[in-house]
Length: 463
Ligand SMILES: NC(=O)c1ccc[n+]([C@@H]2O[C@H](COP(=O)([O-])OP(=O)(O)OC[C@H]3O[C@@H](n4cnc5c(N)ncnc54)[C@H](O)[C@@H]3O)[C@@H](O)[C@H]2O)c1
Image (cartoon, rainbow, N blue to C red; front, side, top):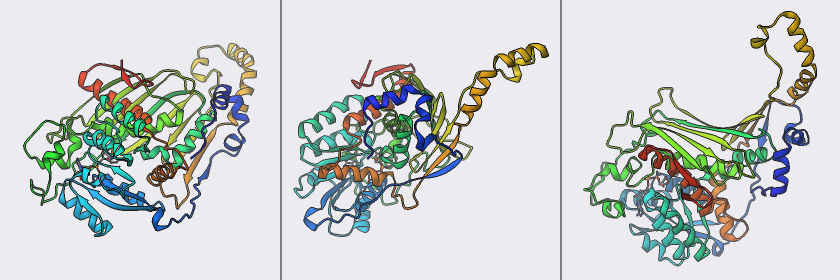
């Protein structure tokens, strides 16, 4: 991971504005309009059989399988146990990772295994806090999927459990560990876009899968699924496979588009600009299309205010999600500043540098006589020369990840395992995770209360 700039260096760069830019030769030296490489050096480490980090997976659904596959690519990691509430998922684990695994429907049995060093918690959101706290108390390191919590009041339980046990706990918004996000942080700190003015984030989806209509397997039944355990702290309802396989659609188990998608954007944003988060949110939207029993909106627009801090100016963030986007879909994450814009991805980044000038345009000059126009032009002669010099520092730069880049998930797990081995610190600890989750949950709070809500991002409390 890139070393954090000291606050002094950072402030110097951020406040010097364009003066600092001319002294940052790598990024801002000519030529512009070019593509550069983002590169990560992979070490070819190997570990003895007795030096493996042994992991268990709790929640072997879509993300649990993606996570575990990435974790197992990191040298020195072995999977020894899998827990899930649906037999078909345990069968799938066997199919993918062999017959030697301990398979169970009860996560407490997995946590009781002395040979397990770390667990991945990839259950639905309403189980994150309880299983993470139990796992930390059982002495395990924990990789807990995002959003860290389903409810605001759960944050302190994880933060305290991590503090009291001293165990490693990484929260799973993997994007911020990516090459693209790391580059964005570096550029932002060098002043590449000047003062931050706006974040523009959107996700348009146009598929049943994108709208969380996951397939329900034909063998789903009360026998193959432990539905009562799935419900956990949620209200008791009769068996309904939709709730189990499409839990994101229900407030009892999920966190809507905010906890599912906004939280990633907050992790990236807070990381890149070194922020604790917003202090106000206003959400609107509605259930426009997916009338399938869900009780969360499929269109959501939320505006957030970020107050001025040492690392950024006061700015506004716009988050927009549309699950019935007839444009076919797409997504974006753009930081807009006084001197440019950065489109940030995990594998690529584009920086467009610009320079505002004060030269009057044709639009307003038309209302003056030719003689007056000439006088005005003479008055602006110095500014015109400055604008020409400034123009030389504008242009577009694109960075793309190396062809064999292993991706954000691999990076995030590498960071987790390095922290367990004591050679690094987790990039997304529970406090960071709670700030991202809390900011996301504000959107739900505002949407369902139909009013703006305010938040102390440092204390992680509604105000
Ligand atoms: N980081 C990312 O990019 C990303 C992407 C997708 C999902 N996620 C997160 O991962 C989590 C899982 O999402 P998913 O799409 O894999 O859901 P999923 O429904 O596919 O899988 C969840 C699994 O958890 C199991 N489960 C539920 N309660 C359990 C319990 N008490 N004990 C053990 N197993 C239990 C279910 O049987 C199911 O197989 C969610 O929190 C989601 O927000 C993160």
